[in-house]
Length: 150
Image (tube, rainbow, N blue to C red; front, side, top):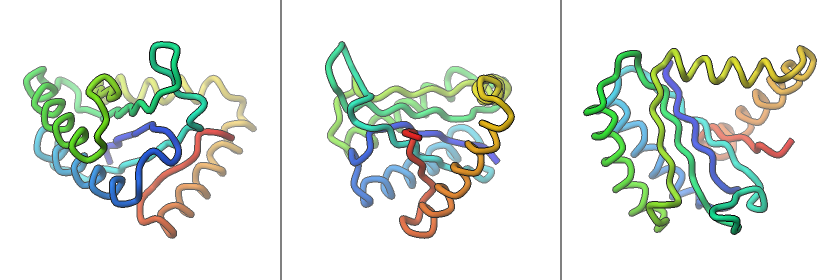
């Protein structure tokens, strides 16, 4: 299953905006990248941890797990579709949105490298917290999300 990871400020988006954006992301991912199943994960940072030009900001970062060998034409088509829809839903400025679509092998290597920075016990605790947080979010909000402020 492919993944889309969104990092944004806690409280920046309403539940309705989150649902609209999730539908937008999945629709365009399946249209431009791969028709298979997609898992969307929302990562919320405390607002005081997000800066733009040395000022507190409300940036959003969206990382799509691509497929190996994805053409630049497909990436650009996805970027254009997502950017247009995202800005309409959120009223953010274009400089507040960061999109990336690394090849699947690069995406998975990034995830592995991040996990290598944590001890075995830390990975277990992180996995446990993520699992319970994702499950709780899915049950109460209807989508997968977790707080990055552990």
